Length: 211
Image (cartoon, rainbow, N blue to C red; front, side):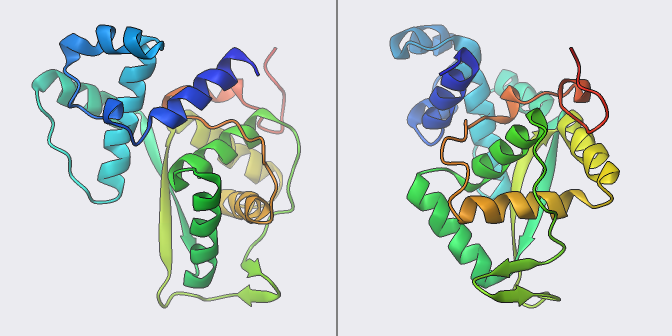
């Protein structure tokens, strides 16, 4: 496993623990990071991501001090909330797959997008959801959504690449999600938003790859 992959693996597992909350005082970050055997920047990154995820789910978490609030604001400003809408029946299967893998749903979507943008493989874009022989069109009633915080640069790269394919980004991401639900991406490296790139040139956009 590469260093980046190992770092993403550690970060994903810190999410949801007490170390991913602001209960850890800023002054104690270095000591706690040393105790865990991780670098302090990763711990700060995971903590900011955990707070963003809570806000995405409508679960407000108090910000204990001005420094922590400023850090959250800075992270939030450089992130885009990528939203995917699901038919309720597909959403239920999606959440079950996330639970089976032990992955937080927004982390799963974010990691799928990051993995896709780093590679050159193209899934077949899907205009509509389709699961086990059922095609879902015009599913406005009861639909539910999932949000994943990604850098604006990653959003731009995703749109540019999708446009060159003659499709929409949601059609590509839908194909990625359904592929994961069918068992693909078993070794997918998990990433936080801070592990993604805000510089779109670092992703493959279907035009030229950066050296």
